[in-house]
Image (tube, rainbow, N blue to C red; front, side):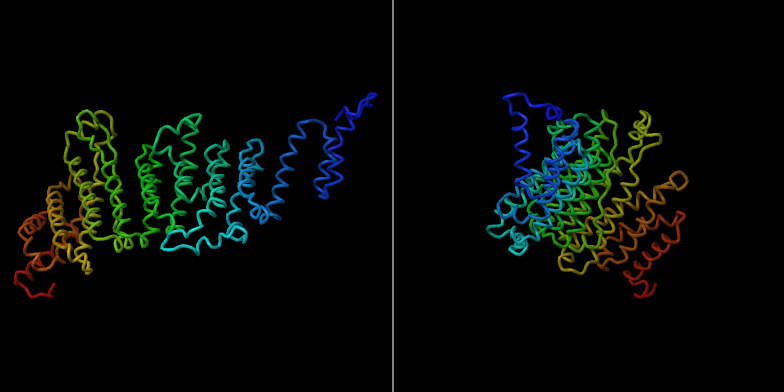
Length: 489
């Protein structure tokens, strides 16, 4: 401060007035760090040095309050202001170190809230009844949790530093009003305007959004009893992600959907299963490229079939919902089968440069059929009363599927289509093994349809696995028709 080096003009006391705040601070503040800061301020060479040091001093004071007086912040109702303060520090772009430290402090307020007797949040988990919050909990949510959640929301949505935003994803809200707007860009175009360029949007989608979505599933799982009422909104969000043109986002959405099922499979009620199956049905309809058969459109989007055969999912999902799910897989199989059989369309797509080789949906067709056969056979042999009651419905779906697959398999030319033989052989083997486990009455009923198709396979070159399956079918036929005693193989 150069003017302090000059002599004061007569009848003026500007210098004295200027130093009065410093004198007051030195006299009345017992904090050694604060007194040292006051002492150094007049000696700083220029204003830029002051600007560089003040944020550090200010954040040090906030840190001291957090470490030593956090309970008092809660006690006197200042927690909301404390969160706003940390939010502002988190968005100081010129001091990234302070921003990251502020975010870390904001994150660590969550366990401190849970531990502090002043917040009374220990009753948060103890006052639940049938998964619902007890009376009075909403007030504590608004007083303590909403400031934290809104702080994260504010930083993610308005912060300019990508590194700062990325760190926040593990705790992106418990309630719908705070969390879902973060992902609204997936469902509506109106929020895209907040990104300055397409590149910024792509970076946000591939870093912040993906990390947030994964942690949202983990958060939903941890607080399932409280958050289960938001399942519809979560499923809508996952479906919007899966249906994105960006392949990375679509795969992440699919992975998160699978994570949601695996983590919560034992917690889902029949009503929740109905909503999940409905979401799958909608996904299959939305992602199936029906436009392939429109003469004016030449595009393909291969559908990745689900995997409902996981033990926990199978054992939990009600039989009627599983049958509905199987009908969707059957649609996927029939669609791919129709496309693969349409050689003119495939040639047309190849000629316009759609792919370097003749396009096909062999993977979708064989995978859908394999999963479908596996689950239907498992349902048929399930001893639970609910599944026994649906056996005739299962056979009505399984037998036509099996006959279609075996007809197509017998028509494959092993010389020109070796990949098809390899893809379909395991499926045919499973069908034959499954038929051998039919009840005798059902086996006899469908034998006229199955016998000619199995006999035609004898004219083909067969692997050992397929040969054994065919032999097992004929043994079953002999036993059912009384040509050989049961028990002989």
